[in-house]
Length: 366
Image 1 (cartoon, rainbow, N blue to C red):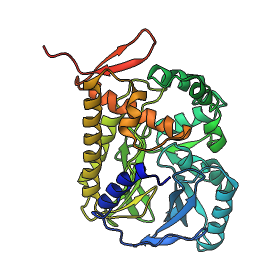
Image 2: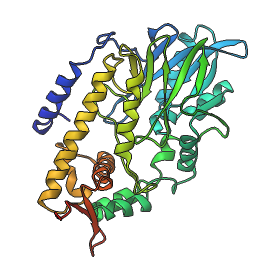
Image 3: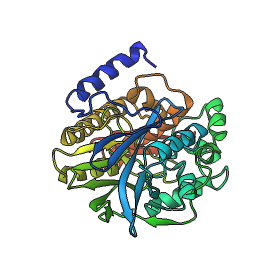
């Protein structure tokens, strides 16, 4: 959507993007093909049927138990088009070698959706954090896994309570399993600080929170390469949300603390994001994201200073564009996350009205 309301947002994103460097320029992998971004690291890109219309996936040259091959990092959602693209990759990009393992940064559908298919196709193990594995299993266990009545009631308690929207959210109870029909019944756990030997090189696991339950990024010091997943994106800001499964989490603080961990990495690190193009300028991007959320928090404080406000009332404050239902659910999660950070810091207080809606206000001066 490119409306007049979006143009200031797009201009700001353009200006921030100019502060980063894209070593590959405008090069993108062709469908079913790869681009080499570092020794033993191939980039592939698959389309998504959403506003965020692509995901980046990675092949790492590997050897396990004396068998040469490849490790896959992230999978795409489960759809026939993605499977067809994978088959092209298998035929033309693996140099006659097999897939040896499937690594998933986190449990969101575009990352884990085809993990079961890839693992079965190659008879290999899934590698993922325990928290994200467990949540993905819950999400695939029928229509009550995520969403539905629980999500609708939660968002209604934060002011998104018009009957039409409530009914539409209730109807999304099968959304996750349509994109992730299954996950492997066994997995290998990844934890913060673990070091994986992939192709003779050491990749360190870096946990991140706020976007997913226990997101794992991978950093290779020798290559100066970070597979950032969704924790470090070059143009858009990562979705950071509070949802009904953990209704009082402080997701935004968790996210901001998590990305600061990347400051320990080499300044010249090549960051491989899940969306967008590989870039350098990691420290600059961390600061941009910190500044972005600082500014949004200031806007929330200003609005709540004027009157007690719900998360739903914060949507036009935080999002300057029209939102469809899918985007609204993400936006509500983000709105609650910003309110919760200020609430936990004591800069806002929360009350629940007779209508059952939480509203946040600035505490009275003592």
